[in-house]
Image (cartoon, rainbow, N blue to C red; front, side):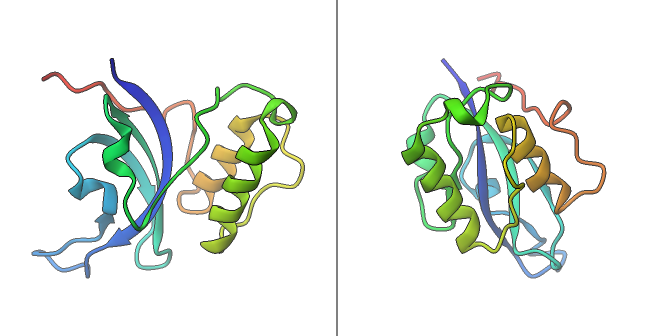
Length: 129
């Protein structure tokens, strides 16, 4: 069964035709959707559909908590919040102050790279194979 999960990852490539800017996840063989603004930002927010998220545990790819989008942040475990905050802070990503729901966090991150970002339209299809 495929699960969908959010990630923040490095943007790789040099912007040339042979090596375009792309999220690092693009080279890992998974179905994904991404929002990024290279070269202005060196990171992307992605949503991945995969049966094996373990393959994404590589340098330059940070998983976000596996947490329902509309769940309240005060119900997320403190360890998960701390890990997420540390990953985002290390990338210099500004987080919302006292977000109500996880949706608010994802939206705030997405808006940093795309002013038209909508967490409601940021979805990825399951692989057909």
